[in-house]
Image (cartoon, rainbow, N blue to C red):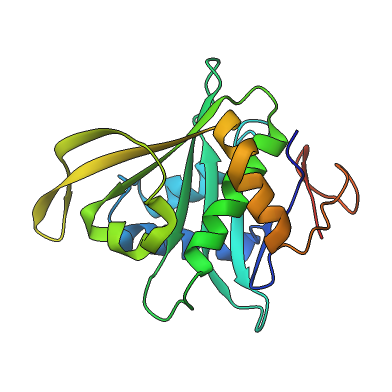
Length: 201
């Protein structure tokens, strides 16, 4: 069983604040990875999200409390799969923040939903370089050629995956060491957003 963590020495996850929903929308527009509805439709659909199947968190750097981006878990399927995403403007982000955020997110997904067998992360070559070493050991399951139109051209869309078994064998242990070896019990210090618990450290 994975242990819940929502922070490392550099990064902290929190439930997304209402006033940051439009910041998320603007960031998604800028990154060009997602096909988006109108701003009003995005806001209303965000408020209608079922928290039992979807999680949206804001990513903060602990040193200054600044919101550096957002993390999401969605498309949770009966087959035990879910899609995870980290959305950050790579300019001005301290080195390692993206990789630590992805580790926290994968761990959070497996901790929150015991039925998950595998999580998927999608990216294009436009953002692939910003993951650094985070994807070197992550299996690429598929590539959809010319699938995303962004910045005046077509980009290949890459699917990466992490299984629960491989995460428990390596990633979870590394994250626990990185977080200081102090995993929290489920529910300890939790806060509520809708009906879904969010663990705090």
